[in-house]
Figure 1 (spheres, rainbow, N blue to C red):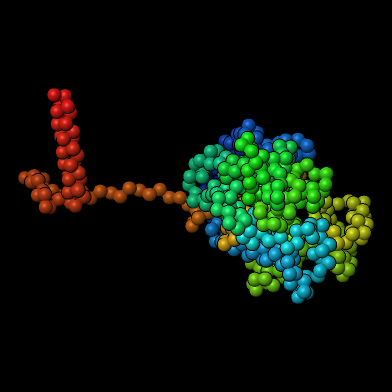
Figure 2 (cartoon, rainbow, N blue to C red):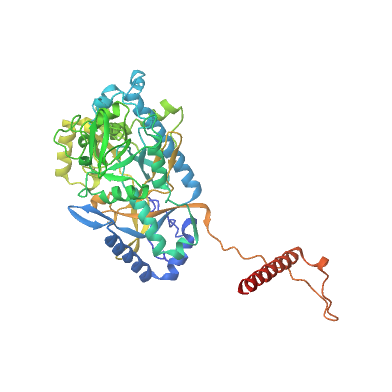
Length: 537
């Protein structure tokens, strides 16, 4: 193989999305390979460094171990072909619909427990199941307004769900900024591909939030509630508020009066109807949760119960993010939708089950163990990479609290070429597609956030662990933008001698129209000239 991916290494047991094991370039990347080869490796590297500097200047940063850093964007895009995306899109939408039905059920009639599909204690023992949210009815019945479903591709290239995020999924701001950065940095490459746009996300989100307003409100006031500028995702909060044209507020900007939420403004208190909150449940309402919280608004949960304000996403959604609950989602899909899951889970052992626990304890050095309420890759133990002391400590911890852990096999995430010091090398990636539910349809953003583990062999892609991102291109059709050549004009053949002008009736229709337009233009100019002469006199 020649081109940008010459000498690019592949591993038979790992699915590389760009290069096949025999060295061929997959269809979605052929054009990119040719163009990168034309640029040269040094030019591609310089463009990547330009993106990093521009991100720092624009404040596109994240918190890494207490330090604000530019969010790493790799210069090589991740390409997903149209047919593959259709499968992913359908699977994500199916999962969101099932989780919507599940949340409405467990905070209401609990029929799924009555029918013994899920044991009661699995739900009620979750740290994110909040009884104070029981029987709160959202304005249009939607609890998961925004979701981020984390996906990986296994050794065969098949997409699998790694985990669900229906509490406060983050990262969509990087999808939007990555696309703008890539368009300005690689205009030649972007311009030759038919890439589905992502710019509609803010308007889609605003439409869904307005649709969730309390009954009878025709022109709802929507606000974005942020913990403040010291939060690691503050860039995203401010960006979404600006793009939606909504006010960005902190808890101190809100107050409840008579069961309604009001916002302090320079013109006095104004009603708020929808709160797109980026504050965790525990800090949202000091009356219902932590009484020492200064990030939320006292009484906001009572206002939601009274039907005077909608909180998006709904309080208590975190029970569906519980990784133990994740293992039951295939059954949840079958129960509520009567369908087979389109996107399968990763195989999972429930350590609260004695049989599963016994098997896992004998194989700790082969498996990945995850805390059920962990996020950002925190607490994950990869058995093959752990020391004997770490495994012994893990065994003690799991035995003391088996409900708090699940186990999964080590899945070799797919790889995509990534610019590192040694050139283009394979790095593991995952994908977080974002979905918006407006009560009528679940819309999936074409692409989502691709996170990439920048360390060689590293499997944890989270930015909190030093990971970066890629712009995700979902192609439309065959993905290629072709130049449309102008249609050649018909030429009229005439004899060489004697030359005879064609009669008007014999002229081409297009020529007749052109002559008529020229005559009309001449008449307009003559009339205009005559008017000017009269005016001069």
